[in-house]
Length: 230
Image (cartoon, rainbow, N blue to C red):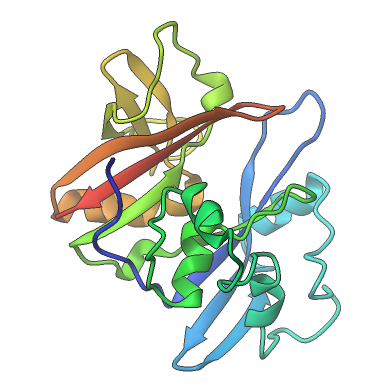
């Protein structure tokens, strides 16, 4: 089984909110950032961005731990996100890691762990994504493929299947769009929150892609992919 060998340690994580308006395509919107500066962590909403305004129009209110009308920047902001994951000391923590294609001996920082798992909860629509703009190969990234519900293919998609990453500069919705392709066709895209930095990595290094797992939720097929940049 493929696993990560080169852990990426980001300095910035993007907070992403997914819209769920009935009859409207799901959109992943970047609405905030969690920034690491040595041993301090701060959070702020990205209120001046098109994504933030679009999210508000689609029903976004706030992230539970940080009020919109509060400070522009919130200090000591790591704990609310860490509380969304089980503690490392739990006996079943390795099972939690395995859900995200991570090895049981994962030795990255808590900050990188937030980036790899997304700190997702079944009870809301928030996740964290690493900012890849400062990433340099060799690194391994685990992707939750976006848009699988709109890119169904007839052939069976299975673990260990190879994938390729193909930029789509003429994409009408995102000029940074990167399709995730198998020999049978497109299965989805790299998340919009990752696509710009991911594209920069593609242009400067070689990448191999492998499907880590395939599962189903109530809404879509969930496909995790390992992207290894060399």
